[in-house]
Length: 302
Ligand SMILES: Nc1nc2c(ncn2[C@@H]2O[C@H](COP(=O)(O)OP(=O)(O)OP(=O)(O)O)[C@@H](O)[C@H]2O)c(=O)[nH]1
Image (cartoon, rainbow, N blue to C red; front, side, top):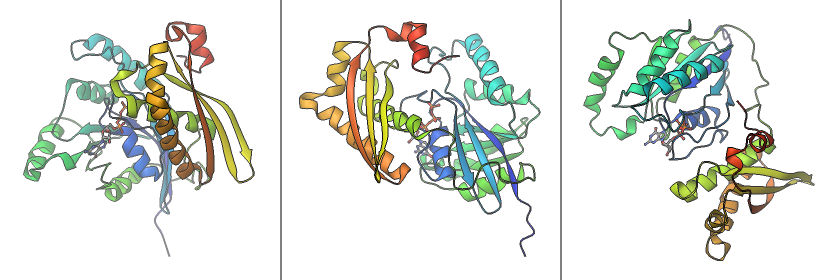
């Protein structure tokens, strides 16, 4: 007889941009629900990923990356952001994962730690990207150094990308959660609509394939989303600010846009488990990112 009590709760995934929060969320959920890109602060929305096991359920709250104006010199602005972001993100949360990159402890990591200290929450230190540390002998002294005089409920060494250490991580997270029934049905992996996820999949490809060439203002709107027999027909508009940017997204002979569409479609098919017919367009909306009404129309408001 299984006597292990079932545990479930909300877990905030906190950490500076690019440490691997989205990769970790996806690895635990076992599907691509959070967008991943090598560019910092890709995450704009709070996204919830749900990981269900026979022993419990972890509901992950993904916090947005730090704002891009926050250079290491801009400590006051970062502090303000951290306070604000942490406040909202931690409502109703049972535990927090502070994700850092193995071998590093930067000012932003310290701010996140300090912000979490002010909450009465168990904080687990998740040292990610250990695969990047070639000399594994360096890991123990690193762990000793970052945990000295800091308080953590548990410490995990993982590689979200290579899926190493995730079993132990899951077990330790569950220990921090209250004994209670599952919060969501166990086949649910996100509370986001397919429509929202479809837009995120296209935006992820735009960011991945065009990197620094496009401004952060680029956004994606799903114009149509229809079930057609066993397939989904999706129409997506990539909004940019200038004609020059439109040309970049479309690429020579439309090649870039085709590639973005193909990759996004494959991701959607994997996530939705159905065939997808995806059409993409690029449209110009001048200066929309500075216009608050337009921002609101796109669903971005504070
Ligand atoms: N080598 C290695 N790379 C990783 C690992 N985890 C994440 N990455 C890479 O790090 C980059 C950033 O990962 P994300 O998951 O988008 O990071 P994030 O913390 O969610 O970033 P923001 O959304 O900007 O806050 C991507 O290129 C990932 O592939 C890891 O365990 N090992």
